[in-house]
Length: 281
Ligand SMILES: Cc1cc2nc3c(=O)[nH]c(=O)nc-3n(C[C@H](O)[C@H](O)[C@H](O)COP(=O)(O)O)c2cc1C
Image (cartoon, rainbow, N blue to C red; front, side, top):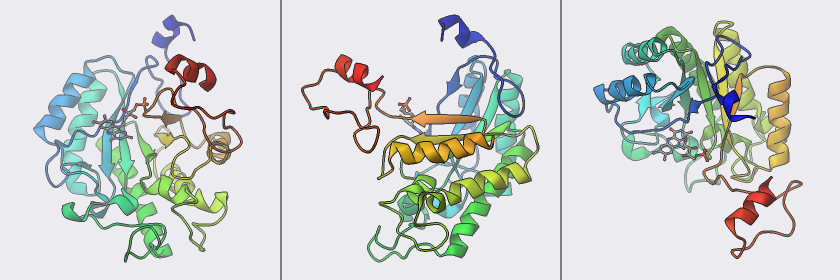
């Protein structure tokens, strides 16, 4: 892509186009109120971002259930009490000419008991003494994601972005290492992807035709193979269920180390960054 094209508008599958190709990555800044409400610090940060020229601004990870919290002073979207502050954020972003999305998050087995979180693993083997979620509980969490998206729409956001990266609940369920379930949410790739797909389908069903959905993935982590993720993403993209796929790497020079797409020979510590970059292409 030529540099000039970065400043061209980009049409998404639903809703308004992006005014350019710059999207702000979701960033948890731990400055919301203790109950997850938007604080004056959140509001001030969003006011600055709204003036920045980004085409699409995502909030940091927002809890879809109080029990799914991972970080102190994390943004919340699990209650109608949060609507007032979220509406202020959506309004300020729109006034700046950008599109807005709330990143929807549940920490799964990494929910923090110190903060009122309830660890919610896909497998009884993940945490000593903590039983896997029952099927009903998985469906409750699925419905909480969908209810949170509806709340985002009511607050005036253009869409939501699903946090499916870094081992949080959606990626936890997809992982063959963290998910040994025998119900419809475990086993083969289709079943492990079911939670994510049902969340996306539910949001499409419950929210309006212009509502935008993004999905964040981290490549090759927690036992997921690139080829499996590719298969799942292909289905979701073929069905035009989402508007954008957000690949979070942490390491921009990361290469595939396992599975069908692994690079051979494997890299060693002696490989320089430029070499790694070339191999990653
Ligand atoms: C302070 C901080 C907060 C972050 N918060 C979130 C978050 O809420 N949600 C998320 O998906 N990623 C979060 N990230 C990850 C970033 O969005 C981004 O993926 C990371 O900085 C690596 O960049 P890359 O994905 O372009 O490789 C955070 C990163 C930092 C440094």
